[in-house]
Structures are given as structure tokens and as C-alpha cells.
Image (cartoon, rainbow, N blue to C red; front, side, top):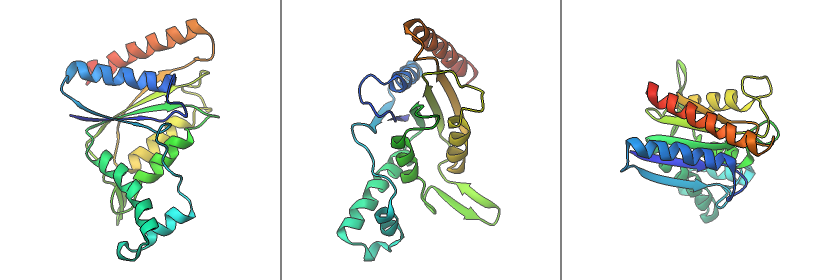
Length: 201
């Protein structure tokens, strides 16, 4: 089993979303001790944003790309190959200003490529990253689950589903800015919820 862990915090050290993602991987190891794990830390190794130069590179035929354009496309190609080879995806997702981090957005923009990870058909778009289990580890300072202020879950359901990833499990650690007792309780609740996910699987 190939597991890809994406740590999408702006911090490489001390990120609560990474802590929660680590718990998911630890639980996966209990059932599959021989799993192969790839960890991509988007704070330590940030992916460039989708800007004008990147778009020009992507829309230039491969044979006509400059060395700089080829190098830029190769950065996205590496992330696409990584997710294509993955059986289980674990996303560590912090909440910044009611949405996902720019680090995670850049990663999602990189792996969303027409005719490679999705395509348009007579019946509408079809995601090509199918057959993957996805765990989304959500860390929030406040408590937003199930409210209109939680824009992360609808967005992630939409973009991941668009790419063909529909087997999603959302795990929450909330109230993390509300004191040490709240943090302890949040992770205890998250662990219990994680066990419930594996009990159903």
C-alpha cells in the first residue's frame, strides 16, 4: 500500500494539522505495517503558484517549450506522478482565514490537469484519479464543523471529487486556540472518530 501524506501547513514544525495527519498514518500502519509512506511537506518544499508563466508553459506544446518552461511543467509532473501512484492520500489541512492554506491550493492546482487527472466527456467532467482512499485531517483554532463558516469541506469535496477521489473521510481537531484542555480534548475526539472510520471500513 502506497500512502502519500501532504502536510499543508505554513509551518514545518509544530503544526496541529500535521500532528493529526500523523495520527492517521500511525493508524494505517497498525493494519498495514509494511506500507510505503511518502511525506510531502509543503512548508519545507513549497510548490510555486499557478501564475501566468506557469500557464504559458502548460499551454505550450512540449516540443516548443523553453528549458525554463519545461522545468516548470516538470515540477507539476512530479506531483501528478506521486498522486497517481498513491493508494491512500492523507491531507493535513489547517484553516487559515476560513479556507485552505495557499500551500495546499498550489498543490491542488498542480495536480489538476486536463486529460491527465480529469477529462471532459459528452456526459460532463470525469475524474481520473480513481480508486484512492482519502483522509482529510482538519485542524482549526475555533469550532466550525457543520456551520456555514466551514468553507473547507465543501471545497475539498468538490475538487477531490472532480479529480475522481470520492472515498473521503474527514477528521476534525477543533477549538485548538481555546487552551490546552481544549487541545487535549480535540485530539482525543479525533482519535475516537478515527477508530470509528476504521471500524466501518
